[in-house]
Image 1 (cartoon, rainbow, N blue to C red):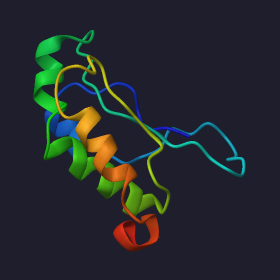
Image 2 (tube, rainbow, N blue to C red; image 1 turned 90 degrees about the vertical axis):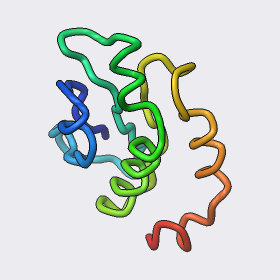
Image 3 (cartoon, helix red, strand yellow; image 1 turned 30 degrees about the vertical axis):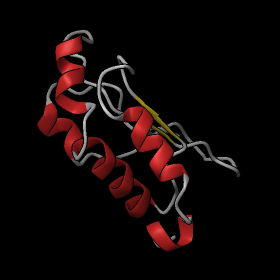
Image 4 (cartoon, rainbow, N blue to C red; image 1 turned 90 degrees about the horizontal axis):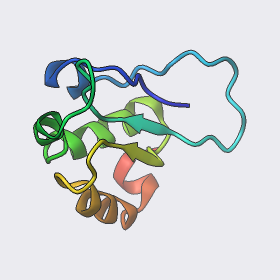
Length: 102
C-alpha cells in the first residue's frame, strides 16, 4: 500500500499519511511512502524543499506510528538531494517495537 503520489507543496506533504484506496491489503504488506512534490512535474527545487530532515524523517516516523506499520520504502525524487540515505540508514538500525511503539 502507499500514500498519495501527487503533492503540490510542502504543506500538502508534511503530515499526510492517508493511504490510497487500492482495495484489500494482503498479509506481509509493503508500505511505500511517496514523498515528492509534482507540480506539475518533479524538479530538483521541489526535492530541495522536502528531501531534508526534519520533514523527511518526521513524516516517516509519523506515518509509521499513525498507521501501525513501518514505512518500508520512502520514495523520493532526486535521491541524491537531501537526507534520504542517512535517514534510511538511521531508521533501519532502530528496534521497531521500541522506537515506533508498534
